[in-house]
Length: 165
Image (cartoon, rainbow, N blue to C red; front, side, top):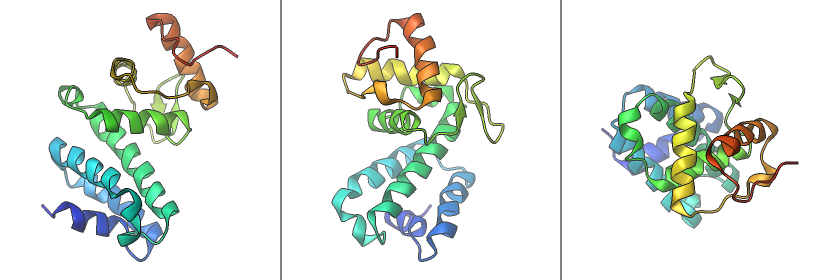
């Protein structure tokens, strides 16, 4: 397997639109769960050094969004790996879902591409988030996230920074 720096360089190639598909292609190679976690950490650790790899901050942030989306697809079906998920990855997936970057129909929990994300996965993420003590302001959630959180709030007493409109 390539080292992390080479993989990130692949994600940030010259033709950026085509390179975003490199993220999907990397997931299709069947990486180990530990490799997914370490690559996510490496992408987060780039921080202000994103210019070493990416032309601008927009490309860096888009790559992180796409990577979080494919992490969600990849890990949602691997229940045995959930307990090992780093809190930073959980936080990134939830923040991207809150912002509307995850193409989820929260009423049926069906992905636009017909991939089903089990509700147990979302509940696991929200439970870990609640236990972590981190902060997300849920009041400005996308409308689909708002409906899911309303159901979750009633089931599990999730009232932190979340009020009905």
